[in-house]
Length: 294
Length: 235
Ligand SMILES: Nc1ncnc2c1ncn2[C@@H]1O[C@H](COP(=O)(O)OP(=O)(O)OP(=O)(O)O)[C@@H](O)[C@H]1O
Ligand SMILES: [Mg+2]
Image (cartoon, rainbow over all chains, first blue to last red):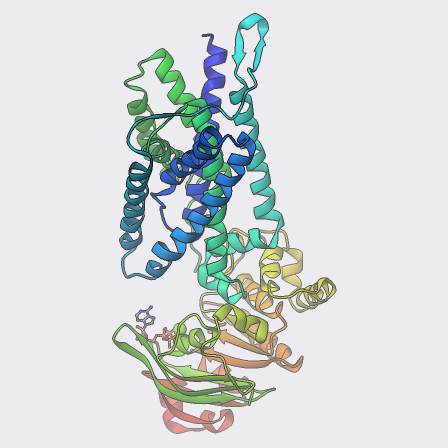
């Protein structure tokens, strides 16, 4: 494989991390919690698509749409039932531990329903892709679609956050929840909306991930979830463009290390780079200095 | 009465911060709430705005008990607050902060009228409308916090220590603005450490001591009250 092709593959994996990281970073920024079950929402999305598309034979696009809707409902329900009651708990660890609990719950539920065996997922994209520069650059259809979808999502999210009233409410809640309430903003509704968006994105990420790496188990979402979390921290947690950049950087580093250094060491290198970046810039690439004014 | 507080008790865990307090604010008044650090002034304003739920008691606004209405809906009913420490949205521009203040308003033309009114009242905000609020000076942030609260066209404005940390000139400016806002027809409930200034501008005042209202009367009376002069006016 040429360097260029490898690089583009990294970009593609990075785009998936970016979409997942967007959910992580928005929920962190607005609800001020780490939703460690976020990766498992991806897995749930994958199984839903698998069920409707491979088993019931619905067209991929319809299956994805169903997965997006059901994951959104799952996200809203989880927040309502598991996280909201703990929002004002004395220790912020309470909700974090609950999120880990939700993660195990979803993984074991999938185990119970679908079993531990690997399901092979048929790609939702059938387009074979492009070959450019006399074969120097081979791009699969799924790669192109993944990159395009993630750019589109970033664009729509930025417009949503900066140009709509609901988006502005999210920014306000992320900066000062109490002051946001004093503006007349329904903080609960804003947090619900954030979970809805994050979970819908997890379903989209699931469709892309399972199409690129078509084997599905109850633990499919766990590792991408953790890496997307790393990506969000790398980019500056709470920052939407930061999640995008963090995701892309992470994906590219991972694929390049896997190809040119060692596939066993790739993950270690990824996490090593996180450590180095955080030592140099603790707030991440686009993270802001925490400044306070009297 | 526009606002009546009846037997209001508020707890933080087991600590009782407000002990069955009673007071009221009539339409068109400036009422001052003074008291030492930790007396419960901020707690009172937070409870009126719905940031904290009372354990018992009533908050009557235009005769209706609002203590069980979610805080965000009280803004649309006509209650706005300029919180202690200003709490402007630091990463938003001045204009976006003002837009957040008008969050509950639906009418576009009314919005721009109010924006112009606020810009007339605070010319410095107009000059700096595109600046990030976190980079404003303390005085400018106070102006912004007040302008932001006015954007909802409140019936009553709750002000929590608006003069805190400001230079004497700025303090005078803030009090001038409070007077003007009041002349424009807004009722004001003013919490202040600067008791002298507060009593000078207010019609009536309540003194809060460790969670209880201990003294009440016309502002002028309190200005001439010996024990008040000793305790709060530093004389
Ligand atoms: N979040 C909280 N948790 C526990 N106790 C609190 C909390 N907020 C306030 N208190 C306590 O409640 C009491 C009243 O506090 P409050 O902030 O209302 O006082 P204040 O009159 O506004 O004081 P200051 O003039 O210093 O602003 C204080 O004893 C304070 O320690
Ligand atoms: Mg206070």
